[in-house]
Length: 553
Image (cartoon, rainbow, N blue to C red):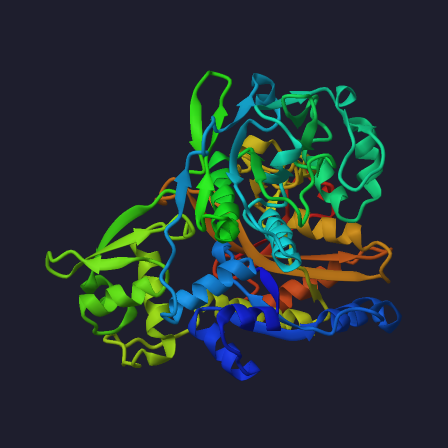
């Protein structure tokens, strides 16, 4: 869960009243949040870097609040205050509007075909006549960073750029060029750099170096120019210094470049809805046009409202309450979901605002109704179905075996259920077609291509990784392997296996033999052919073929 840090005094001022720490903790719980920590900037620096570094830091109390990962509208002070005010019935949820510019054409962002090779999508909008204070400015910058780390997946899906519109001139061009052809003065620098030089410069930057791998291997880098050829940004790395925003900025041009257009729309909506309240016309956003390489023109931000319908009976049944449709509609309205009964039975019409992309279907609406009702207010009831819990027999047997195998002097290893094709085929002298392995359709790495069909490669890799440990190494693993099985509805089944390995300077087959005998003794399996178990030579073409044996029950 992302954590939002807000200054307590500014928060209480925005809420219109003060709370004790206990009262605010309770308010957060009622709203579905958690007050994680009460601290200060000085205390944080002192704890992380030492008292000497903390001298001069602020003593203002900070509230660290845990926010659900899908509630992007609560990642800044503005959204948090707005949500709490609506929840406490002190404010009606605002209506966000997209407007045309007063006199003149909307700003235009033109996307060229070259961007398809690296970052093909872009959206844009304008916050007109906005007023920044130091606190608002800090919150504006911090929201960008929170979104980058959350829905933007560290800028790999979406990168946000904010610019002083009065310092640049549209229309803007979003294109991609060879690194050596891009040259500009980046944010907080005093001279111009080429894109190649920037990548070298930021390799040691503690903040920006994490984003370099997104584009550094691409033949072209994305870049945005204004009509005068001034570079606005080189997403997803850095903005240009020419268009940087400040406390004096009145008009902000926001662009989001992306590999995922849906995520880009959500991020743009979050940025403009959270800070449009500071515009001369609160909660209005000036539209911008985005022209795609095929000539299609789209207008952003979308700020789309949509309506969903569900029954009061559905909410009552799922939450475990008995409330009227009017009462449920009131609960949902407190969660910024404007709702009203339709008059058709117990049907409720719910309006989903652009700030709530987390609401996908009826279950999400039901969850908000439960939060507004209060989890502590839900009456505890006895389940209608009585069951007696019991451990799955196979897992119970496995746990018992693990304890006795550890008592026998062996150490348990736990390896990944996925491995490479080489691990279960080539390295064991087999063909991959003979292994009955389940293949991953789109593996991210060569290490996780198939589901393992045997535990032996994992233990061998564990031995290889621990060769510096004192000998002997006595390891075992009891886990599932995955095998093809056409008789199953999913075409595969799990099979619980036991594997042990003894590694020393001298052979120790008798150690493994003894462990096998002990295991069979615990399982009450007698050493005999037919009804018991016996050991025979195994025809296994593996690295251990000359010391291999198999046990046959």
